[in-house]
Amino acid sequence: MSTRTKIRLDTKRGKRRSQRRRQRVSRLVLLLSALLFAACALLLVNYALQTFSARRLQREVQAAYSESAPPVAASAPEGTAQLAPAPRAAAQAEITQPLPPAPPAAPAAASSSVIGERFLSFYAKNKDLVGWLKSDAVPEIDFPVVKRDNTHYLYRDFYGRQNMSGTVFLDQSAGIQPRSQNLVLHGHNMKNGSMFGKLYQYLDIHRLRNSPMIEFSTLYESALYVPYAVSLVSVDATSPRYVSLVHQAFSSGDELIAYSETLRGMSAFSLPMDVQADDHLLTLITCHGDEQHERLVVALRALRADENPEELKALFRHLGS
Image (cartoon, rainbow, N blue to C red; front, side, top):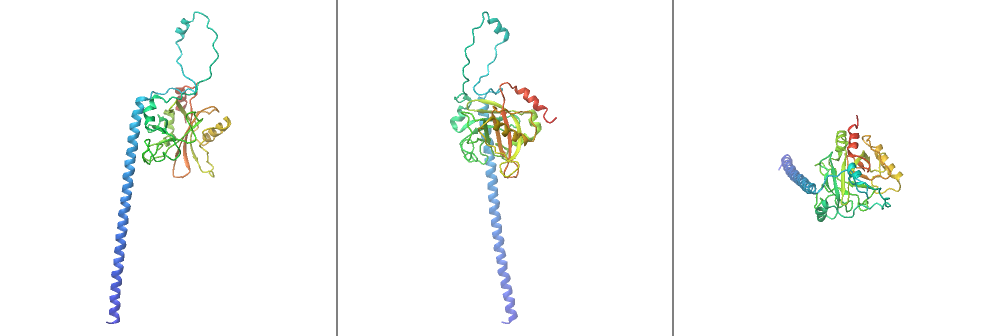
């Protein structure tokens, strides 16, 4: 065999080997692509199923709660009861003799330690239940709130089943009996709109104008809250927008005022609400945007005994005008 013929044969063999290698690589790439596509499809199906499950669960508990929960009027401070005054004419007609001196006032009673009837069926299903959160401005925010630690309900639904939406939970450092001065609630910012996935709508000034109030009913008492700040902050201590958000108790009234003023200073709007040292606060926290450390905070305080909800709503109707 001549050298030229040998070179041609070697060249052909080399081309065939190279072609086989390319075919193997192509088949491997196709196989990996198919596996990746199948994995993505499974993830999408799982996400869709969990989204459906979360929404169905929310509808079920909403329906059950709405049947048992009466509407909440303006909240009274802890330890007080709101009594309907007797009609003036009837009261005057009954007074025929001078009234005896009033007895000394009894100390204010503590908030009830008996679980409200509306919660009994839910509490029987999950002893981690602490209350119910409801927003008029964002209808999707209408669900139970739980408490265990700050990880258990990150990816579990109300019944403890695995679900990426999780459940809104009270910070582990706070309590409802006795009630912490600042109730801090955490929830995922879900793209499917569940949990705090629609909390960003409080950045819409029109929603705040029309429906500023949020109701948070614990197992033992109900209250209406009004926002004093809607803020974008950072939990990165090196950021100029850093705020230490979790304060269930304050060492002094000045500390509470400083906390509220920090959030007010970062608020997207100047809201017509002040905060006093003895106010009870409600703080809703969720992730926001693409920045790992950014948080959206809707900061609220409970209505005071001498405040009228309709009058406060009227103040918000002029917001931004």
